[in-house]
Image (cartoon, rainbow, N blue to C red):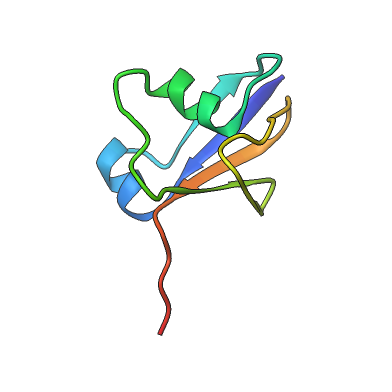
Length: 77
């Protein structure tokens, strides 16, 4: 099974695409998903993440079938 990965706003612009697919690996975290897909690009500071539409820490475990989203900090007003 795979993990669906989505990128939003400036991350999508920087990477030139809105998502990726990653083969599931046991013991993977949110930060590990980024590292596996972008080994030469550090995760930008203050990047937020969500797993299955819920905010998540970078240390949260990710399982096969999950959707992981990365997005820059959001402001409102």
